[in-house]
Length: 197
Image 1 (tube, one colour):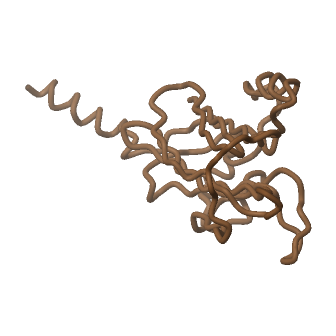
Image 2 (cartoon, helix red, strand yellow; image 1 turned 120 degrees about the horizontal axis):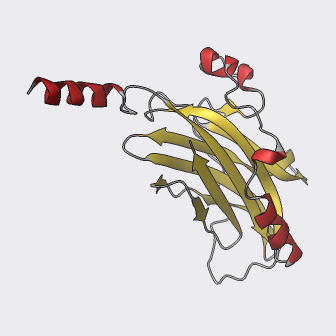
Image 3 (cartoon, helix red, strand yellow; image 1 turned 60 degrees about the horizontal axis):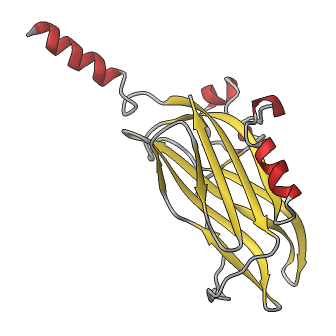
């Protein structure tokens, strides 16, 4: 009986609910060069992001970022030797159908949604508009962990449809149940997320 109780207590304290786990995250976002879609997209949609995101590569700019995690190298870009999806993107670009908007790999702690901050990313070209220069791609990814790792994306892609410049988004939350690549689809652009220990 005591052994069973000890096992329950130990399993609780090693649970992600009590301690943040560290993960390596790789994100690849790409545009479709020749999108074909009969879908009608709302023209007045404007970007909205998760609050207080950590800027990848410069986490110290966010006062809310875990200083201990920052000191241990969290949210800093890793080298190309840590990227697994690079070869995939090269093959996609060779087809002439896709164009890279953003590709990065980093490590960060992931805990519950309340204790894990979203990350901010931007990529693609810089576009000149009436409102000024804006990034082609911008948004946040919010990773969290309960039983599985989850990601809540709010990615916005500024594109042109029938001569009108509009924003389209990927905002489908997903459970990442294993250490593999997950694809987020949209007629105009797509994202691949890979999370490993």
